[in-house]
Amino acid sequence: MGEARARSTTIGPASETSGEQAATADTSEDESPVTKRGGRPQAESVPAPGVSLRLTLYSVLVGIVAGLGAVAFRGLIALFHNLFFYGRISAVYDTLLHAERSTWGAAVIAVPVVGAILVAFLVRTFAPEAKGHGVPEVVDAIYYNGGRIRPVVAVIKSLASSISIGSGGSVGREGPIIQIGATFGSVLGQWAKLPEWKRLTLLACGAGAGIAATFNTPVGGILFAVEIMLVEISARSLVPVMIATGAASFIGRLFFGADASFVIPSLTINSATTTSLPVYGAYAVLGVVMGLLAVVYTRSIYAFEDLFDRLPVSYYVRHAFGMALVGGLMYLLYRTLGHYYIQGVGYATIQDILNGGLTVTWILLLLVVAKLLAVSLTLGSGASGGIFSPALFMGATLGAGLLRLGHVAFAGLPVSVAGGAVIGMACMVAASTGAAVTAVVMIFEMTRDYNVIIPLIIAVSIAYAIRRWLLADSIYTLKLTRRGRIIPASFQSNLYLMRDALELIQAPFLRLEADSRVDALKTMIHFGHPVPHVVLVRKGKIASVVAADILRPHLRNGSDGMRLADLADGHYTVLDDTTQVVDLIGRLRAEVSRVAVLVAKDADPTDPNSVVGVVSWGDLMQNANLPTNMSHMRRPQRS
Image (cartoon, rainbow, N blue to C red; front, side, top):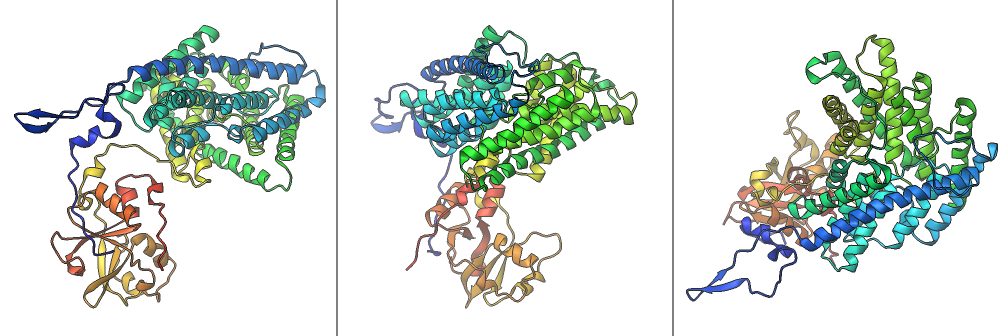
């Protein structure tokens, strides 16, 4: 157990050619990798992974299908909207214009209820994965199901989401389009019997292509795939994504034209060199407020989901009840303000703000609250639809409202209401989804105004940082975290894994007698210094180890009289001080251990004086930036 030792293996450049990379993409694997030169065997150099021609061709197909899927999905939304609101069969629906008064009058309140019953039937009967906003299910398939998604998901997601949106549900169309594109990429990869990394790349192709086709922002689509979907960033994965988004954008422009999703007027934003410090301060304030709203938005959706799940009624009744409340709110807004502001994707309201047609401060702020309530009711009760459009809506309304207040407080503030709305949209998307770079680039692609870049970077960075500070999960990953599905928060090269553990991780530790108590340890820890690991010694030998993350709560809670031995872990791993991080991880997982004691090479592993370092799973997660679910291990049963 604890006395076993390991010497680290050298990890060098050869590690770059592991796995499938032994043969570039689609080349033959029949030739032996060993050749004879001068009678001595010599390893043949293995080429670095290249771009697969076959995968590239598949990515074109995924992009085309994602583009056509976006066209068909928008057509379905138009069809159901006209059918539910006006009782007519038509695929003509301009989301940048407010919906006309419904044929049914006050009975329009029941329209979302009818849609809810249909959605509940589709989701419950055919594809539970189609419930919700779609992107978490795609991410879950990437990290926990080898990139496999059932084909029926695309069909049911298209129908359920188009019914939800068309009947007045306060959700967006981007999430469903992402899930539809990703599903086709997954199905194609499974049909072609592609290896996992290629399937995952095709999923990212479908997701990025969906964003590109929806907003006519090809670069934004690429970056969305990079920030949210891709598990590796390399030529072999990035090139297919770029090609897919380009193909989807081409299809989108064939059907929708070359304009962006919104008609954005020229923004009165000065260049960086002529902008005053108070204006930069206004951008920073905007970022702070949007970051706070993003936290409320994320928490609200899942709080309402929990609330509806606790109701002692069936899914059908829960969803119908939630959508009845949405219908009532929608009709109330129509009666008081003249439009069904919160129904559907809400692009007409955003366009009103950008055009300067909606500038009343109290209405703008009221619509923020109304949209937040409506989308929480819609998704919380079990609808199918995206969270992207509601984030744009709330960002635009709150951004415009704050700018109106700014103009009152600081006369002559050289930022237009439309400019505040545009920056607010980017902040809300970045902070809520975690796709910060995507948000900046997408808004730039829509405005094509270089002066907006620096304000966007300032406000979006602050909004994203505020949300991360208050809530580690994005609106996508929180759904999975609640299921116990941990998603890595970042990506990095293998550099950290190749470091010696002691070189990378320098956690403090102490040696104490096994009968020591918590109060004795407290006297040894100076204020402001990190809590150390403790190696407990009995009769001159290492007895057990207490990790710092176990000690912290007991030091805070005043457990002064508790014996350290009661907190100790006798199941630890002993390694020599030359062990690399990758080997350390392997040994900890193999031995189902949570802490390793590093001793001097060739020294007695039971001698406490030979200990040169202690490393816990917490140290590894923090210093090597590893996904937290690597530490989720089950200890073997002992008789």
